[in-house]
Image (cartoon, rainbow, N blue to C red; front, side, top):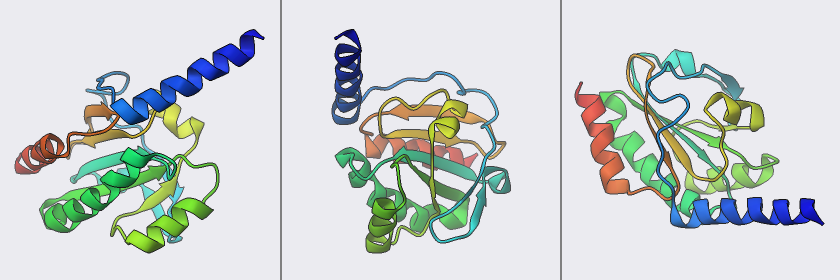
Amino acid sequence: MPWRRASKVAAIAVVVACTFGVRAQQGVTGKPAPNFSRVALDGKTVRLGDYRGRVVLLNFWATWCAPCQAELPHFAKWQRKYGAQGLQVIAVSMDDAPAAPYALVRKIRPGYPVVMGDDALGTLYGGILGLPVTFLIARDGSVVERVEGETDLITLEMRVAKLLAR
């Protein structure tokens, strides 16, 4: 059946993107970051617009994505290291239900807000087809970069530091 073949191809594409990584700059790069408001897993409301004046690392992830889980502790370390300089990490879980992300957040205690995402939020950011996807947002609210797939954390940290120095 054609639809089964299409769904298998889509599933393979997601696995490849998550496992091997794909870099792209598309959609919202160079434009103002789409604003959103979501309730974080800790019950507090997160509005992207409230972080204007800060450098935002916006990370779309899921608990079933191994590279995603590997990045989260690094982002927590960066939040502690660069938070006073103006960094704000926000994680958007693309899991279907909050139970698994909530359990992981309780375990690793990242020190930054984690909200639940969905297709509508992903579409605002140019579509989220594979995970992880990370956006760097400058202090003026513009999207500087979109990084898809497993991230070179050393290079990404250097880019964060450069944005903070502006």
